[in-house]
Image (cartoon, rainbow, N blue to C red; front, side):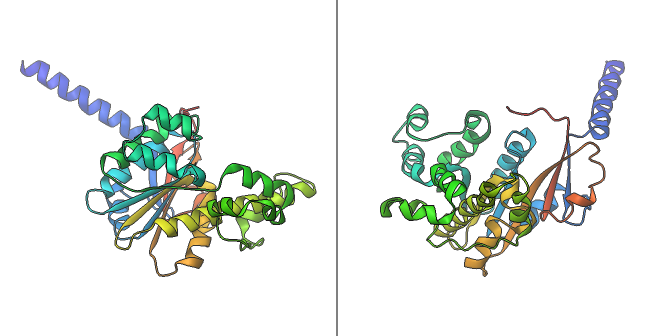
Length: 284
């Protein structure tokens, strides 16, 4: 028996060693220094608003979102919100959280992303089980598309009632922000000049509803694509204009071939950086 026990112990040690030699991700701080999950959590728990910037199809991003949420929920009252839910679907989301419609009913009433069952349903279920508010923070996509085609002036055609689903007009817009400037190069031609404006509408709207749903003393955790909060721009820029008194933290996701040293280009993108192996399996 002792022999088998020794063999089992050796096997476990070998597995642990292999896992340590080939990690799926490594956490870094903004300066590119490796940091423990516990230390990151200790810092986050002292904040008012946390942005978790994900790669939409990355399982590490989604797993980390859920783990951070559950762990923060042990010591803080939470409010949740997500880019993946548009404001005109807030009523449907509220009905589901209150147990008044089924998951099938939510799927019928709301425009759920195709990876909702695997990647976002766990967050919604956590909110439901713990009776947490969950903000559908994004602007309805048809209005972002409207701005992408015709600029901010196109929003003048939106009915007054439906303007309640977006940030108050006119939308403040700083075209010199690096994130928006970089978007101009994505689509050449005149039509491309409106692309960052559509992004700004989304960012401003998400900031607006985070502010609306934030409860003093709570920790608001917002889930969004990494580009919406990287470099403290996007949603973070808009929200800090509105609520400079709040304390913020950001997490982002990056992908590298070698995750053992954070590339210079990825430093400073957020307070905490999830560096994921570029060979990581995607969820879609």
